Image 1 (cartoon, rainbow, N blue to C red):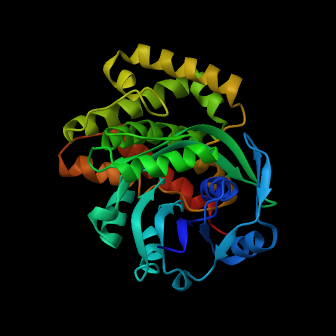
Image 2: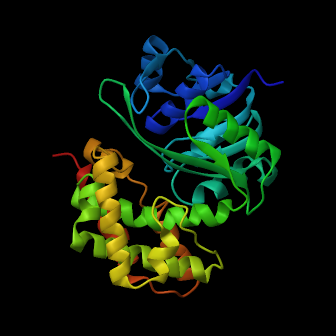
Length: 325
């Protein structure tokens, strides 16, 4: 039996939320972190505020070579650099591995690292923010979904989801993980693009009719890509993706503005992680998300002009935000 039930790669907001809740619930968890964040966790543990309010010491592994393995690896880093990070764990054994990163590319990277039998699909409609003092603000707790790829439920998916859910991070298993991952991805592309360009909290750009219109058009373009790939969409996502793509454009805008009012009432402080990243001068996931979608569309000879425009715009924002001087 592995020494740890869970290993969490990445100790930013999402990794810390998951790791802290599992640890508090009594699970044996290894937090894979490095640099100042690793030192911070070793000295002070993880403090969570917002939807949960607690602090817990955690086991920190700063050198991946020291981890022999774990029952389940949960990848919660930003997508850039994931392959290199997983390469440091090539010696380790994991019964299962899943990623709660953004975009479908994450599954391909995990399969390349550990092989298809070990990899589960997953998505997170869960949010948080790592504050400057190391505290994690837990802002959204809707669902982490886990399932077999490309579809199918299993005992291990149910077990992992049940552990997360019982620990306080809402989770469930699903037999339709690929559909749900792409449903989230289609909406996420729109949300991320508007967050980075408007620099506004989520409820504000959802509520504005002009930004809602642009967001709706982006989601609908992504819906065309999913259809071309033969992937069915669902409303069980961060936004009701299927409805946004099948109704009229005006109906899509109405859905988004209503969603904005809901966010304003229930999660007014919610900000997309991409907005947090650009304001902190951290690299954005443009290549691994928008770039991935654009590459798929080009392979299919499918023209998605708005996606193409935002891919280049966000790439420019990413680079110029991190230029010195």
